[in-house]
Image 1 (tube, helix red, strand yellow):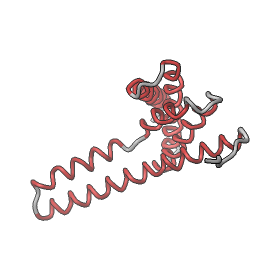
Image 2 (image 1 turned 60 degrees about the vertical axis):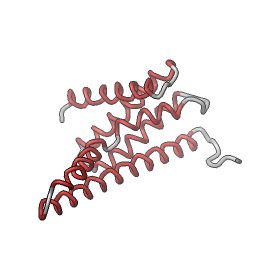
Image 3 (image 1 turned 30 degrees about the horizontal axis):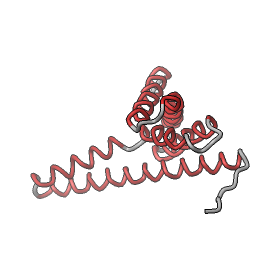
Length: 159
């Protein structure tokens, strides 16, 4: 992957995040930050993948970048969740999820060894979806904790 490919993937990550923010009916004033959050997450992901880091680590740190961009842009709390949600969704394990669904759909028409291979492939893809989803949750949580330390906010609020 070269610099041009990383730039294109970064732009598409931002466009996807901005589109999701529109679909999630975010106010117009949050669309630019949604774009920047998605672009930042995808940029961090691609840079770490070029550096031969695991997909889970790259996804987690990409999610952390989205949270940091979203929290730095807004002083209050009313706006940043939509930026985070739309920004981390481009990092999701969509390819693995589609492959897992495909393997599950073809189970009914397979027999014998092909059936067993499809089950194993579906399990492997489902495992990848779970790992990537957990990496997103962990990265977003760590980013939130870091921002609270940086801004010297209380970690746990009174209910």
